[in-house]
Length: 219
Image (tube, rainbow, N blue to C red; front, top):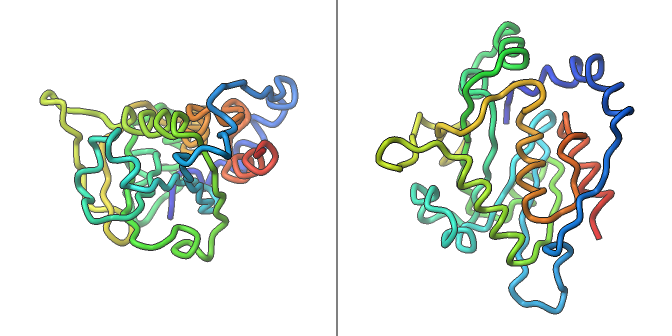
């Protein structure tokens, strides 16, 4: 899965590293996490590391009551959602100027939604996949965060832009502007943070850092 984040590794190390060292990372506190293991309504979501980009996979049946935006994939078992720059994300052949434009000028954003019929760990067998167990309350909060990331037209309907990158997938108009400090991985971190999981959104500039925080802070 491609994303304009493929320039981030080089640029971030030069621009951001010192800032991160100075500001540090503090863990948020929430009553939603960790989930009570004795509860039977806990949910599992999956975070997929695509190299420079991360996607969040939700069990569709569990997300449906809280997410109107998933009506396009009625038969799917899981949905993978990613957020990124409108032009770069949807372009097959990316050029350097596209990446520079996306990182240093605030640009419009899109959401990519892909339908999965198999277990995400099996589907993305060649990728790093983290499983995140959440309380029902935390899961609902995460789903609502994602749902609120879809831009709506004047009729309060989601805006379909075109076919997605693989399988049964589509692009949608998204809320928010993409730039170096608000990239695809910070969006994933904010979504995860909304569930109550103790991830610091200010320290996430790469997929690798996000996955590191998931492993470090998992209880």
